[in-house]
Length: 102
Image (tube, rainbow, N blue to C red; front, top):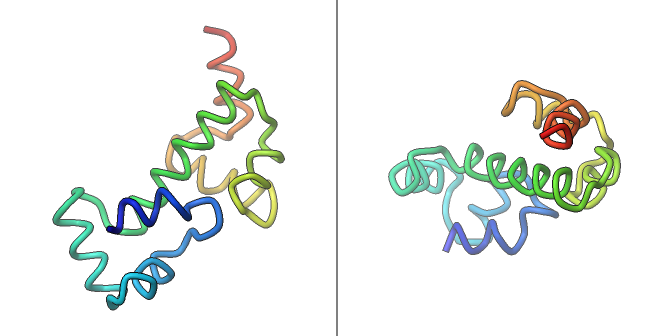
């Protein structure tokens, strides 16, 4: 249920609390269940899905980081960039340039 809910809503909802409420669980209960099922906390699972989609948009659709931020429901480019960099170690534009060079 959690995985399908994330798939359906990750572009609009980035908080584990949203999914916990939608599924009728306490956030901590959802996070424990996600940890057991996926090896990641609920928040880490959501962030991983967002970054995967950002990579797809950057590499295949060749969107700019600003457009990716918009498509993925971030209030601005810097918010997406912070999440992306924390996860990959690179800014979205730099990651896109390395993929384009291959």
